[in-house]
Image 1: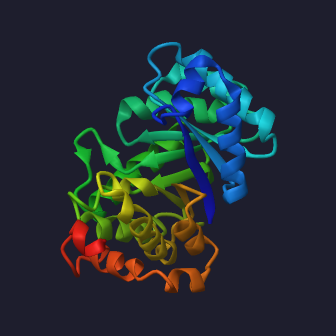
Image 2: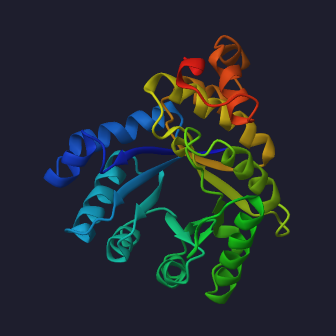
Length: 274
């Protein structure tokens, strides 16, 4: 499975200021730490990047590549000018994170994917908002696929993302996302690739339960057909799932509790998971 390190993020208390102050040290240290943990790709998340976005994206991409020249990058920003600035200076095939089935976003990011021969993440949501179940996610996926063909971007460059919602507020959606991943595989031959932003599953949860929730969900998603995850490559439990380290997983009893919540066998409760 492809591990995409999530930690070079403008929202980080250490990385954000380093980006704005053009301080390469924390950025490069985080890049190397994630690679050592097992990341195959590094996500660079600038968020909206409304102020000085292109210059900042170019700086961060160049800075990361100086420290990790053999690692691919996944660029995440809603600012198309910042996205293109980053794509221009990527040495290896980049991933665009992300578009959706919204027409305006497809028209913005698919031409960039074609021009720079980038892979692209497609979120299974439309102008109507977040999909309510697996079937709606598949419908959104087919719209993205059609647009890929329209804009002459090969389907083998697409990663479909079912869009995870926090288990603390949308518990039933965990299994809908898992089912969608299985269904994505049936949309094309050869099967399309899939990806999740794994940390979305525990947004808003207490710190103590985040790691087992993510690890438990990852252990469900991989057999369903998951190909990649934007995740924490330095998290012991999450990487134990990736590396099939059964001894580490068996030693943590919070994994089983988290699994029962994700499968809707137990109602979400912080104290239960603790």
